[in-house]
Length: 143
Image 1 (cartoon, rainbow, N blue to C red):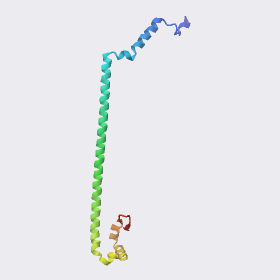
Image 2: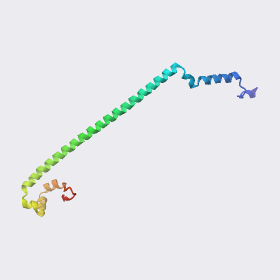
Image 3: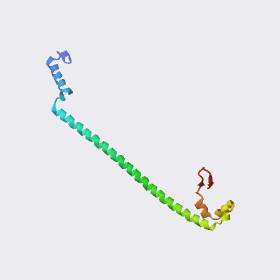
Image 4: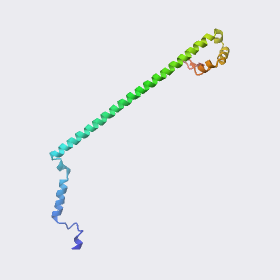
């Protein structure tokens, strides 16, 4: 009798029939036949669909806000750069006006006298040292 404790083949037929019935109850095809399962499945699908739609809409709004913020930042940076350049050009125009009043035509047409004139005035030399005049054909006139 002790040797029959672990013998699976010797199970009574009623026990194996119970397992088959339990396995049949776990079969998903049986669940689809109930109205409760179908209503729950439709509700879950609607819930997941709504969540996906909301996530997609939030992503689109976040992208729109990010692009708008980047555009505003670029606009502010452009305005600030334009203001700096405007002030710098105004300073250079005033300096050029002062230089123009002190120059005569002979000094302007003779490069050595013009060089000596600018070297004697370090303020003008410092202001105009970073200006490059170029022609459309990429020829540099002065620097």
